[in-house]
Each structure stands twice: as C-alpha cells, then as structure tokens.
Length: 163
Image (tube, rainbow, N blue to C red):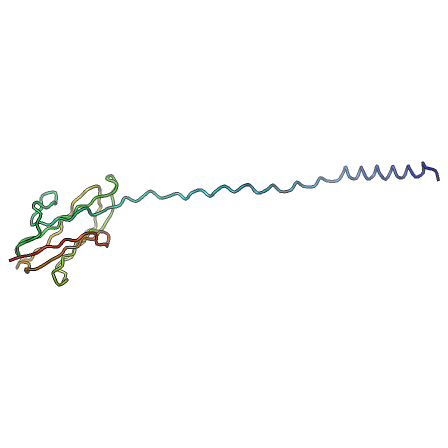
C-alpha cells in the first residue's frame, strides 16, 4: 500500500475529530462561589420607653395647692389627717408615662388601715397626695405607708400617732 492511501483516511479522521470537537457545546461555567455572607444587620432597637420613678415620699398634716406637704412631720395627733406627698419623675420630661401609683397604710401589727391606687399619666416631675384619717381619730401607735409604682414597692415611711 502506498503511503498516500493511509495518509488520506488518517487526515480525514483527524479533520473530522477537529470539526466535531469545535462543534461541541462549551461546558457550563462552574457556579459562582457563594458570596461572602455579610454580617446580619444589627436588630433595630425600639426607642427606650421613658421610665417613671418615685423620687420621694413626704408626710405631713397639710398640703398646698401643688400637693406638696407644707410642714414635713413624723409624729401626728389622733385627729390629724395624714398626707403622703409622693414626688414622681419621668426619665424624659416631655414624655407621658402611664403608671399605677399606690399607697398602703398599715398599723403596727401589720393590719391594713387604708389602701388606695391611682392610674396616672406621669409627665416630668409631679406630686400626688394620698391621705388617711378617721372620724374617731387614729389609734395611737406605729404606722407605715408603703408607696408602690406599677405594683412594686419603691419607698416606705414610718410614722407615729401619739395622744
């Protein structure tokens, strides 16, 4: 056989192989690497709620037009009306904070003499007055008033009724 007879079929096979490889669909590119995960955004914090607090509790037998005790005292007569002036303050003077303010008056043996609660809208500084008295006069002895804000006792004052 002549060399040409082998060279022609070989050349034809090579050309066909090249033609087929040129027509082959390109392989899809590998999927992109996952993007670096960005840190999760910080949670959005709610605006702080303006808190209310009890600043002081003053006892006396009279209050002024502003509900403040005129002359603080810790000893009273049986016929006195006893006032507890509760001074409150909100963290933000412009914010109105709903709250439940309570006064619980107890006698020396722990017996409740009077208990009163008020639902209030507190704004800035304010004073709320609570009072106790008895037409026949309070019995002589040791007393206590406990002031609560939203159910939690925040301040207390001891006082005495003397004959």
